[in-house]
Image (spheres, rainbow, N blue to C red):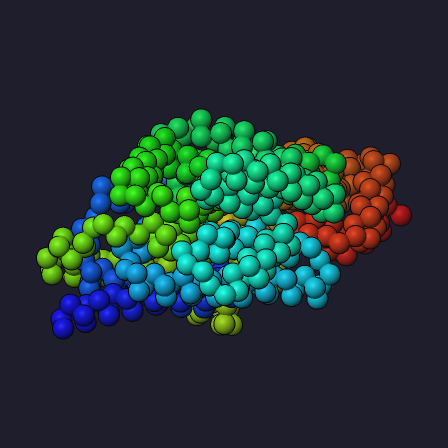
Length: 602
């Protein structure tokens, strides 16, 4: 009776975890705010109950996997450039690890429930994608997901369950057709290739494999050509350049990497120029576009060695126990590995968790009786509480801070509350600083508050160039409007210098420094900085206006007229098309700047 109760609680934990992940996927991934908070709470509950009731002894590959995550945590502490991103990323990995450990020990009854839930969620996601495409008339649709590629990664995990079912079930072919159509609509080239590879690897007979490889390869090539014709996308051709740029970062930190989630900060110095675009340096390398490369750049050679060893040991164990003979297992591994080669999913929680769940269940080892090797009650309690605490600290606290901030009034009290909930949530402090900088006039109270929050943000997120630029703008305005003195001027210069070192290709920081130098009468330095800003982004309107004003300060009227005309022509061209946020920032300029320069030239 006692063992039945333990099994029931363990199965309940599996069901709660499965429903949480499936619901998150159906609603678009649960990336932010309240959705992420609820997902974190339910997953903490499920993982805690699972470890408490089952208390598994870890296998060798699982120990090595945990060692890899611990090494990543060490790197995150050693390189605290983006501490909140590192914290949440490690939490994603830890939850995925726990799901993998738990679901690979599921029994047959729990398996069926998990399969039913996963397939139901996949069919709902596929139906939403197909329905959305029909309503919008678009063939590049991700349904509830912001990114069609993330939707494709989720659907990919369900393909082996439908293509190679363990037993016949009604509706298999319509379900496979719906998921296949949804994958086609997402436009994810990596997913198409991954599905073809998964099906070929999952087939049993060699002749059928050969025929399927030829037919599937031809179909994928035709789909890729059609995709590039209907929806041309530059990223596919820039992938090799991105990979080479990321390898350049790896060469600077070969053993340790840049830390979990630290690629965006580290990649600021190597933005790839798109000279033919309206904005030359708009795109930043936030993802490695390859999961193995992402592991290398984030955890270094040591992390790659640990994670690779964990994978090899797991595969050896699967082959030894006969699990590899399952077509579902082979297809799932082949598809996921293929997709991972072309997409970085290490910071996409719903993909990591969905894949850990599916792989864990498909590769569940029935040959080991887990009840015969359970740790002591004290160890189980300590382990469960530790895991729950880490999930709450690493994921629930940041999600709660973000959610509470989003529904508040964004005043000083709300900033304090958000930072109490999560001391690393500096978005609240940055927002408050921007509100204060937007005021028409400043007094010492406004300056002091802005300086306090800007200082707070830079101390807690030292790797972000934008945060340093906010501090620089606060000190600059305090010096120019309130006469704060030489210390504020030098502090502003230093902050602008750090921002420009971290993001040397963005024009805003050179422009801000130019404004400061002009304000204190250093016209030659201001002109050089303004010229640099428009050389980086030729369509930077405020840079041209400032350069025109500086030319006029030097008595060069013709050059000033040319700068004003250039700025006005950029605005006219930009207003004719749909602009991204970065492009809108390039052409944005206060009306008084144009009026002031125009009047001065009359």
